[in-house]
Length: 428
Image (tube, rainbow, N blue to C red; front, top):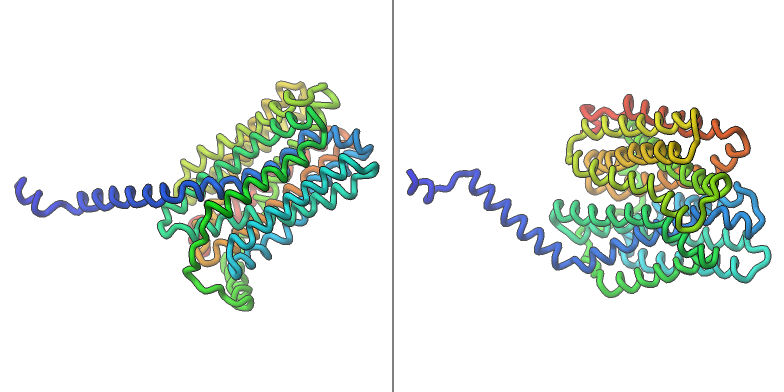
């Protein structure tokens, strides 16, 4: 019998051998591209720093520029508003002229925007509107940089497992940027309040050099489709799968609105009420973001391809965030507030990777880039809306901030409950 088994290995043994060979091939291909992956990972890191790094500096800007809290919030918002409209355009252009030909100029434009904002803050007496113009230019660059990384990774690897592994590293870079941003922003602003503006072009320059030297654009395996056909395909996707796609777009936007609303509120309240400034403030702001990142990492590992689990984790995470925020109705003592926002960060962190995976698993590969770009735009709407909404609510009772953020979260949770149906034909 042993002889027969040696001569005729079982199908399981063959599968195991094949799987082992596949893993070796996978690791070999990833190993060859490790410097390219590192270069691409720098892009979401830089773009995240470009926006979130300014959050702990906003109260200082308010004083230095003699502007209102609402005007200060627009320094974050204008960056996102511009990106909202240009992300789909950048995605379409990258399909036709090449990914690197969009990414590299976009990084350069973003860096120039940072220089303009920094120069205005340094040299001009009435710098606010020029700073906004520079931030708008940064938004133009952001639209053509970070979202194009995802389809470029898809072009670089033939193996879906390799794509997933690389995207995991890039997402880790993105989340690391979220945690690093308030710490680095506070540290730099501790020397000169406008120094974060000037640091951004430096980061962009490093990223441009890395992408130019280390990333080789693969030859396109498919011919770009004409715009008319592209529009028809997208329209068909929304006709067939619109209900749950709209739900995911809405939930993603709300979660980012809540997250950036929380960060804006904390940045203001730490300084005005508790006298927490500089590096200490950055470390405190990093707490809910660190919780979010850790929760995202664990949830991303746990969900695999289980759409039912994705739905219930999304619902549960959002409810967790809503309850934690609503609890602040009873007390805003420093450590209680930090604990509740940390729990809210965990809830948001659980939901975000589930939404990403639902789109990845529920949309055909040919249309995934376009739908992902639109989803990115919807999340940018949330980023854009959060700070100004909180700035306006801060003029009223503080309780309205918690009611609004908690209420929006509960609405998003029920949208997830009733609109996302993994068993439905349109979502399979």
